[in-house]
Image (tube, rainbow, N blue to C red; front, side, top):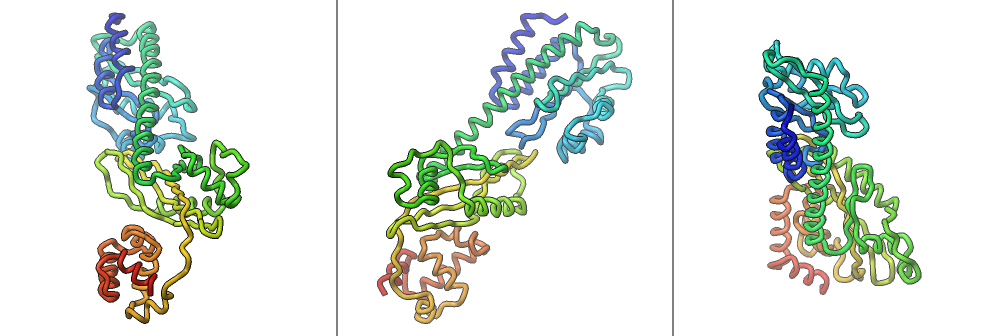
Length: 366
């Protein structure tokens, strides 16, 4: 029977783990206290694993065909209606057993709707089969393991989102909102809610109305979000070595006049948070209120004629005049960044300008 003090210490260590690696190491010290010679476990889905179940084990056989498929395609590839059939679980147990004469038992803790933990335990033949009291103790400890892991997974997601929010806030200090793949807000700030209120109801919207707790996304923004997810779905992201990263790409820019001299400027971009185990798609929505630029200076036709610009260079020049960066121009026109920079250099050379700012001033004062 387990030493209760050691078992209690092991569960406390597990609950205090702050990383997946630390959690796995704590598991490795816990199960031997319960007279287990080899073990493996499917942990509930986690944020860091790309919303997939994690598989860890110790002293079991290398992965057979079923586990190899689960590692390649996710454990969901072995399920029917999201549930692992008993015969599949038993087949996995056979694959994992260190020897044909080893005793084995499988415990499933929590139902399929509440993120189950599936525990495989093995014992050498000479030590005898697992007694009912031992299985009851394993189930009790496994329940605490599951609870500790769910807390860890939630902490990981919260910490990541806080870091992501700070990163985005530093890049874009005005209106920001992040949507999940169901287009539900993950977080948003007051500025964003104000800007969409202006978008929907005009310049006087904020005078006599309280800002809602959550923004109602206008239909034109919703359409832009759908287009962004289609872009993300077709995107081929390179492997990232297991570390979560953020990929940003401008997908669409939105503008709407709210008064004679102001407009709401918005953008919808994708956020691809990828690990080697999966990809979590989000959308980044940003907004700001800007002064409406009065039409002045030469027209694009006059610009093309005066500086002998090609059709592509005219497209580039128009975006430069609207204040877009080289990265944004490349994404908007679907052109590689080095090509964009080459076109910009040619435009500046033809106009006799040294910088984009000088080019803008030259055109608007012409």
